[in-house]
Image (cartoon, rainbow, N blue to C red):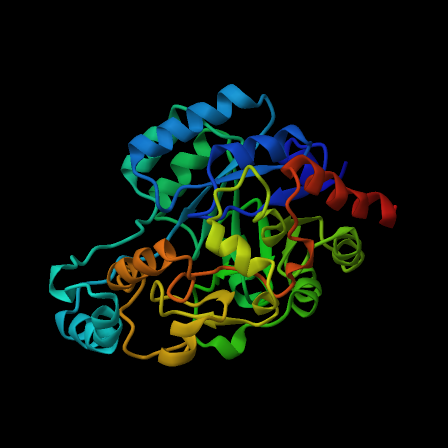
Length: 350
């Protein structure tokens, strides 16, 4: 037991990272039942789908779980930028035999809002976490009024101090090694993004809250190293991607088990916001950071039909193959077994 387990109500200070698009309730339930904190990503769920998933979680575990949301500001549609982006993608649509004019634009992901809060209030989860900062103060206060513990990601010391000032209960120090979307929200400059074991001790020294290390931690040794640098706990995502409880696609799983998994990069061509994934054809040919990509999350709409076309043929050339820089812990094992192997890192330090 430490400050974080007391806060979360878990047996161990381990959090399964919420991973939108590759998991649902099953993974969260398995991890929570193994003594850690399972997480449900809600950024891509409608209120109705969120209610179904939360009902499934509550039926499957009596232990605490985490519900995660994005907090981005939806951008104004930009017709000129969208047209420029589709021009960049036109040859790929030709190759796939898809009429690009038939592809609708759309948001892809929505931030935490009143509709989501209305659903969430009926479940009052032990933990609610946010990515890209925090929601408006009225929504944040509403969540806290239920007694939910609030977590959010910081990718710099400045973001950590900001989160502490606005009332979070613990901070996730997200190193640049982490897979999926960067949690950065105060600046857009990627040169500010540093590694977990450089970021972690700086945030620990700068704030008075429990700090959770995230990024590049794939085994018990990584857990022990993070704790030795002052973490109160760890968050792990990539190691769970190949569990049977995850919904990770066959194409994505194959990439994670291939040599390609050793080359990841930050890219915004899939969503409009920097996220780490395995380098594939579209990232190489368009450039991982292409200035034509529409603002998050508007880039998603035009890429989605290409992804669907090529995945149907067994190719991940146009898929966001999210992965951290350390895929070594990603194995085809039950989530409970992965969890138990990670937990050994806490006793190794003791």
